[in-house]
Image (cartoon, rainbow, N blue to C red; front, side):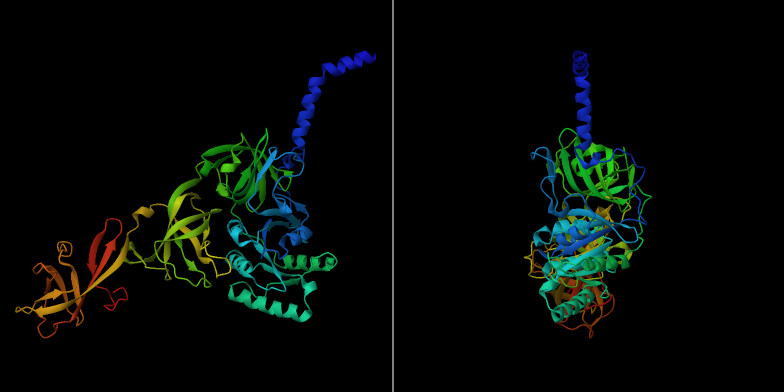
Length: 542
């Protein structure tokens, strides 16, 4: 009888091995943590909200996040290297992008995604990327230090994306007396007002150090969060877009990506395109906060498995969508809103870092002002009101018909030497920018040498060189200081002198040695010059 059992066991041994492998596959990663397929993302009361946890380095952001979070997820609580359970780095390799994600539920039942952002100045690119999905922000401030350089930068980001939904946490209050706490609170509120953040934002006193932490502090924070809860406007109608922040491979299974859906609905079995890699994959498994789902809507976190695997070393933060949704471009037109704390001038055709579409790319900026007949004047530097033409050093991929914010910054500037954020805005047009009629204003000065005998022409000098080709300037309009207007007839001799003809008699009106001005527009598309008479003859361009 015993021999019969052994025979049955070994004859089915291959089946047992197969069952064991399937079970191991289910346990390898959190994707397989639930055997029950859900039809939607985990239900909560109202739309989920994304909260950025911000602050200067060592202010206590991660410790605070660990205190309030109910569930850790991608790279949460500084777990950036290898996921638990992996025995070698080759089994699970995580391409961390320095953002930690966890979640909590508000007292009203709202799902809150907590985005723990790095405080180091050198990692500001990660914060710039994450800020585009912020609905709210918790800014952690060391009560002894007050607003530090990175605190200021983070508050500026909050002022752009959620100025009325910011909560301040004054940490390390166990190290300060009541007078210091009160003084810091007053200074913080003043700083909030100057940066465009609601100065009535809740300020919560906190001591996260062991032995000083009290649960009532956490309750105060939760109440402050609850006071800023709102129902966001989500675009669930368009084709889906997801801002992907992390990518890692599971050996023998595929590639896992995590991110936040920013438009539409991401569904199971959907085909997704990674435009920068020229790769397409199908979503094989989909989760939201470690629960298997059939779809994830705009504003929600998603984690999904795609097969076959691709080289995650080639991957970086990006926005992805269905095939063909994102188009490659190197030039875009955008609105401009200067950052008041940026003290340096920014000249047209200078280069600057631009954070857009979950990337940070160098771009040449040309500041433009709307002119007559649909033309645009190229300004010498940033002078609002204006727009900016951004010419990126490499192609970026952008969705059509989607409002895409950006931030321009001097990231090469030494931290602590002043505000690095220069200007921000929204991308307007990424099509047909090559057809823009862009011109620069030019001006030349000269003088009247003498009035000719006919009284309707003058010989002028001081405006052109001897070798000038006067065919280029023939019939260009000239404005005299006394008022009469003339046109350039041509050269007078070979020394750079030229004749100007007037419609009326100028004898006794225009004087010798009188200054004359030539105003021109130079069109960049074909280097064409056109003369004009400005409304204000004392134009600052001359």
